[in-house]
Amino acid sequence: MVVKAKRTGRPRKTSKRQDKQLKAICLENRKSTTKQMKHKWEEVGVNVCDRTVRNRLKEMGFQYRKAKRKPALTPKHKRTRLQWAKERQSWTVDDWMKVVFSDESRICIGQGDDAGTFVWCRSSEIYEEACLKKTTKFPQSLMIWGCMSGKGTGEMTVVNSSINAQVYIDILDSFLIPSIEQMFGDDEIIFQDDNASCHRAKTVKAFLEERHIQSISTACLTGFN
Image (cartoon, rainbow, N blue to C red; front, side, top):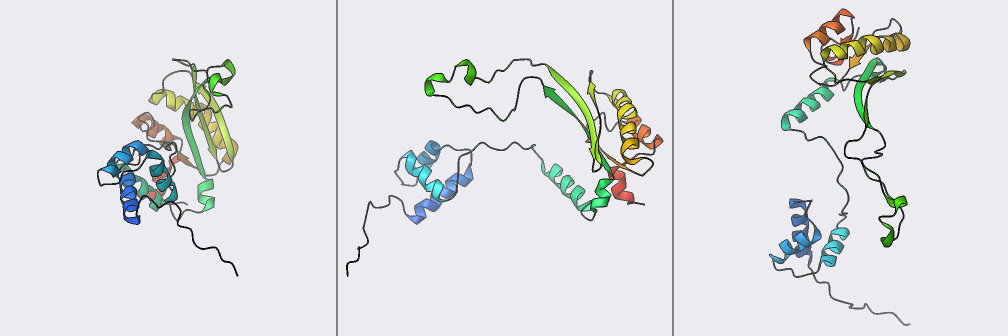
């Protein structure tokens, strides 16, 4: 019988202990480049090339990728959001079906996706017309207001001016009220918008109360009928 003996191969340049040191360096600052981490690793006596750093990180499951965009939250924001979720964790699907969500969004015309555009090109073609994503310094844009619920989409409108409390009331009167009547008829609804200053003005609150429209924060406190 012939059995292949274990081959020694090239000795591994780092030990398990040194690999743990690299992991700690990576977790200390996840935005560090492999070159920066290599220099940090050298400070504890590990002399390797950038490729070895990448290989070790890959073995640990790390990949260098574009960071996802998320709003910067303070500890107070996090506590408030957690409390908001806990207060509504017992809501059923039927409860959420009563909610009308609304918001404004600015759309930049001709700018495409902010996340980036990918094209197939050779290194000598990167500035070819077909391989460029065209940008403008001051793009044309539209401000859109719209609303929706579990029953479907409501009306949408283009907002041609900056939004203050009175403009917001006009939008609610002209587009939210008809949307509610179309989707719910005379049934009770709960209105959800964000905490923009124009949304939280006293005149807006008075308008909603006058029209007997319950906000989601009030609904949480009083419960459903």
